[in-house]
Image 1 (spheres, helix red, strand yellow):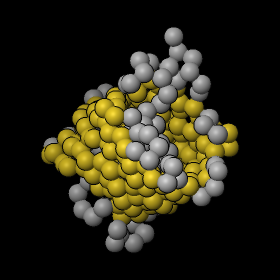
Image 2 (cartoon, one colour; image 1 turned 180 degrees about the horizontal axis):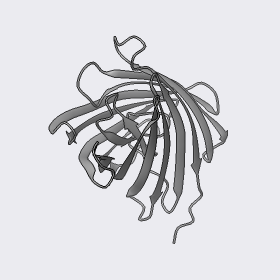
Image 3 (cartoon, one colour; image 1 turned 45 degrees about the vertical axis):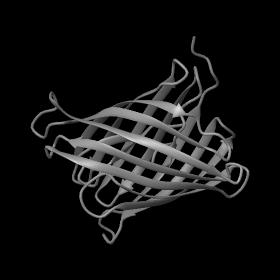
Length: 231
């Protein structure tokens, strides 16, 4: 349902992704005429990232997201990034069924020499989701493309993730994905509904396979979802 941001270890691209805290996207969107806001803090070895991502579904089958991040590198360097995305569904995910959609967007980050000019990195991907055991286990797959403007090259992107229900309000998250050159990343986490379908908190641990402690991270997030209210 959600769009959120992920930044690669080299800060070369920003992409929206699935419901917090997942990076692999799902074949869901925000409810028609409703909105959500996600925010989180991600602590890396040499930096801290602050994120805020609002998203709304104005028409019923098009979720629109617009977000930003501030990245504080230890050493007092601060970077910013922006991203906008649209997401639609070709088949809605149903209990014990499957769903598929399309997401497309553009991530922007300032050039190193000036904040007045932004480097734009367009991307697109197909999210597909598969429900098992009455939605107690859901598998997500992504296949996509990213034009890495800072490095002036095209990249294939992919993700494989799962949601496993631990209790009525708590879910285990596990995934692996690749949005940059080199070995894939992985992430493990837990999401918990304080108020079902409206207020969620989460935490994750992630790293790149085989990288030791250099690229690991920990995140803590908050997700707020509204009831339908848009005209």
